Image (cartoon, rainbow, N blue to C red):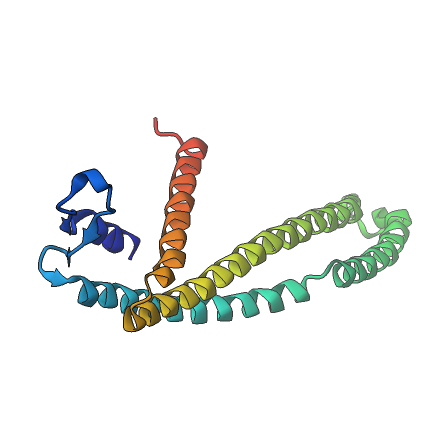
Length: 203
């Protein structure tokens, strides 16, 4: 919708004042060359309103789901589970130590299958701790992104409603928030594109 609205503004024909010396600001006369200015602006406002409603619902539900997932991976719960795993590992290590002290040669088998079992389990627990910490940090970042997009969609919903209300009431001042939000969205897209090109440069 950003490209559509930008295109509408760029290709819109405008009427300039007959007296150019007076410096009167140009006034838009048509939208997309063929539509009346009021009709075209209303169409843009309705499109933005529908899009913002869908985005608000989508990011709202996503934020709730991410919040539940993040709550299930709280550090206190993870530490409690890992502490229990460490305790179980300690008990198992004692059992394996007793098995290692047992002489299996009397059974005709000199191989010790339990020699490295404790070390393997300890390494697995360490790997799990690192994985859980990484997952928790990643979910925190995802949650902040979802909250930001939800707030932005809600703001766009309000601004689109103001735009439509301004068209009906002939209040040009209500167009200003929509223009400011479009400029902000353009800057965010440009910054995101530059960041992606910087992080993933082509060969």
